[in-house]
Length: 514
Image 1: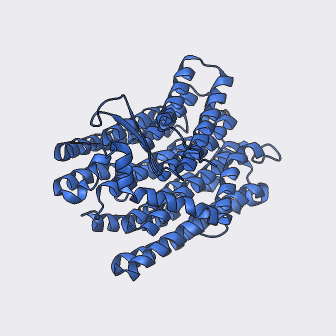
Image 2: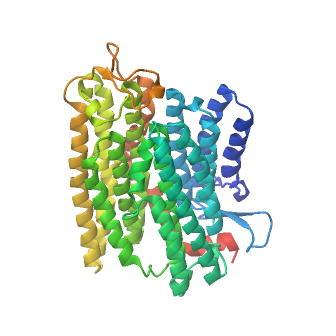
Image 3: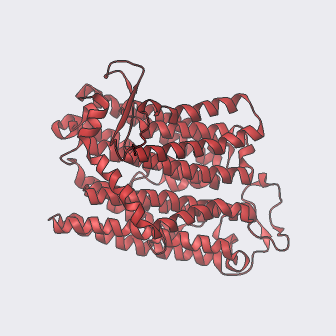
């Protein structure tokens, strides 16, 4: 039977569909239409991503240049198994967050549905682009609706947090654009396919690419330019934080993987510096969790240590390491979405996400605590969740480095992963103790006056988290458990993604035809 292969000319639809949806909702404001498109668009993108994954069984790379211009001026859309996997994972997490926004009523805030669709447009464009300048453009398309989403959601803390988010991202976007300009000035092109091995062949181009990677590292939250992230993200609502966690940092990480794989075939000249920063990031994020006074702030620090774990696969840079890093990336998107949406359900019900305000949930909401417990297990790398296989893959890749003679790097990575697991476990244990046990919840302490109740009001008798609010987080947690159980079916997809990332000649041929 003939294999089904997507026409490369359809790749721009991953951008066009959410963009048209956002434009329509900005003009026609009907609640039913807003909810329909907010949920239907991620489903359509996920279906298209599955078709792409099936297509890449026979076609390693699909590419289409928009505009009919010469190769130098074309706008390239490129997909390989790694791209298709990221499109699928981000679509699933966007769908879960969108369902949560509808259930909590945040989708009724002014222009939230079109802003989410515009954010999706930027994400898909950044994942599919084969050009550094267009990467900058799509990142800016992501940031514009994000500024507005922070302004209209979350607690009143969002006003100060919004300034921090805007300032950091404006500065890093400027740095990214400067880096892209340096790359063009040294290499004469910003097309990734034409930049193949350019970093290995020219020290000046390598330095220019380092500026681009630095800007992406700031956006991802790599130490020492990380502190803005656990301060900014918790200032939004839980649904928007879940969106940002799955999209913003992960797009930056994806771009770092792609740029390094294509342009540095012989290894980065600054790999040792990046390795040190990655190890520190893993440890800092893990141990900072214990100092958080809010549940979502603790999750912000766990995002930092997750960034370190993901980039460890890039630092080790072998097929096994890249496969493990991609697996950890997928696990982290799924697990963080599960935890943030579940915590959001608790906040929406009880009015607060502060540890001192949440106590006795194990007696009051046992099923909520089951989801939280499994999510925390996943972050610590314990069964029966996907976190176990993510950390096992990284440890295996680190051990491979020791065997092949990279003793210092290999042992440093092994120690960092193990020590960070212990640190995360200690910090998450404090979080569990603060929410599960203690006196019973008897008052409602809203973090934001807009929730419509006066502070310190008595909770109605029998108040618990509704099942409908728990659903999105529980569904994402079930996906993490399914990845643990079905790891035999998951690993081939991760291996295919790593293989496609390393197959630079196929990437170049698909884009340039050479």
